[in-house]
Length: 230
Image (cartoon, rainbow, N blue to C red; front, side):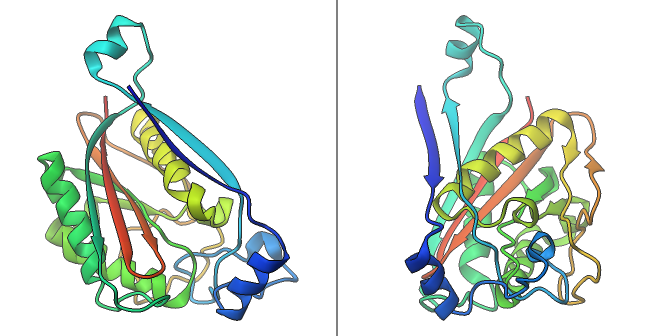
């Protein structure tokens, strides 16, 4: 059994000042509820959030033997580092594309198996476009069947807690066959050529399907996880 997760609680003066100096934060201070708006043409940066998430990974045999409720299945992972820039993403999304492809290979799946993507989608102008390029490059002709969402529109960016919490969102989306919405998306950026769940939930098909969860960090750290339905 493995217990894995992440947590973050860094909303304080020095952290806010640092990200503000980088011009990474939204300046929509007069309307904070609408400030995190992935994929919207008016997005201007992310909103800092705090949170934590933990998952328990174990073999199916062990889970069944102890009578555990199985919510989803871990498929595989891809981890790359493109080193493009200390903060800005590679505009061609090459490291992110490799991470997604590695995760699919590790899971023994193809792009045709992916029906949902919980995107990194921080609401930064450059980051959202670079990730969209990477998703389309990795999934190819199957990309339009994958319903994409940016849950940071609702939680803010949880930094070190983001990957764990968004993995849980991805697992629950597969379990319940419901993709959570990307809120505050009122005018889609034409450079984001993806099938995005805008402002409302979307349903997922029955059967054995899979989903991606992307987590991309400053300095070119790119992680993609694949989860499968039970």
